[in-house]
Image (cartoon, rainbow, N blue to C red; front, side):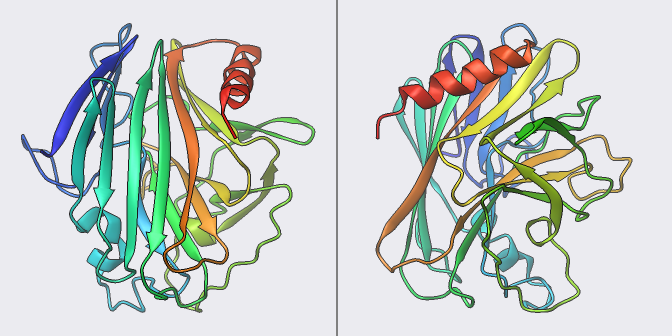
Length: 289
């Protein structure tokens, strides 16, 4: 099973593993397509959303790996097992990967009218991380929104964030994030080791999909969560598809312990900022400890 279609409320989602199908390129797990009832002609994602792209430890960059893209993009290249749990829920399981020996479970559940609950768990099976931390990176390739920016709140109010080029001040940390990750010095640049001076206060961001819709991504915590942005998904600055990405950092880990977080993606008709904040606050209030 390489992909599964689930529907609830206003949304139709195709959840898929890393396999190619119907002319689609291999290596893009997550939500392959997400369609809103009032915008049925196109997916909000260009290639995939909530795509587990990198496991990183600050040492295994492309130069250190002699250009080995399969290891640099290990979650994309190691097989996954897709399991449909119910008509509205599916899970991707990835067995321990060949380089980092990290096992993971990613679950997607559609919640009417316009939300996808997203949960992630992982377990290290060996001490394979050179600098002692686990870094995880998800890419969400947006389908040519006219406005490439994301919006989040800092301690004083709303911030519009749009990087000028790929790998340029790409990552936004929480206001209380004092963790300084160690990176082996190499020329290779990545989104996750290029930092913006901006800081977020609340763990959610959103972006506009034309004049009619909005996409929101929210998290159950601030600890370990970092936002990342690319104006071009790795292409030239003129490329039309930005990436609205995020990271989860586990500063210290124990082999066989399970780590994770919960998130919610909302794809809905455009609304006020007050309504966006209400989406976030209502969801956070609904979470059980």
